Length: 238
Image (cartoon, rainbow, N blue to C red):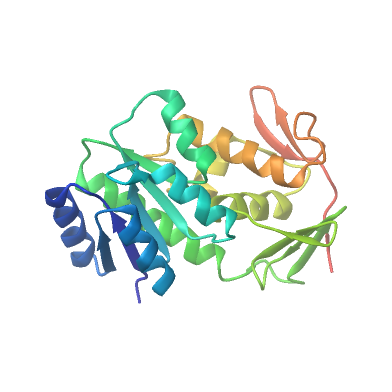
């Protein structure tokens, strides 16, 4: 059964077109035209996935995303935006978005992104399929695969869906150099299609800020120049 999506878009024609396409794909869709309406719908029932315009009549979709992340909601979040400069895209990721689509866009591309994100999230939420314990420890980081949660120094930390999947992939492949393409294939679309070059770097930076003692001098997730990234800490299953 496909999950429910909240679409927040003030352009009524676009809102209708996107919602109809999602319905045809089998998703349950709720729509809002303002942040106030979106917040009311979220209070009634938090959706699994939010597609949100950045520029809305009563505020910014960026602030909406930040509020949800700060409240601990790890739902998937995708921005629709007419802003296409690099800093605008990075601001979206910094707010906690998993991805974005720049207007004008193809409905086929949007649906491809949504389907790929849903597919990856459903795989990530099923726990580990590698056998053995569902608890992986690396120093003061504890990853509980069965409960989809992460602890640092015995304190639970909040990660977005993509940050969580990145951490799982790193901790299940410690001491191995992982290329950009390997990470894109593991976390996003099967071949990295529709994924912007900034997406991986920004998500890794955000993950470092949450798990590293000093994100500017990472000891766990390290860059390997010209090759990719490596999780440079021993992991033990318990």
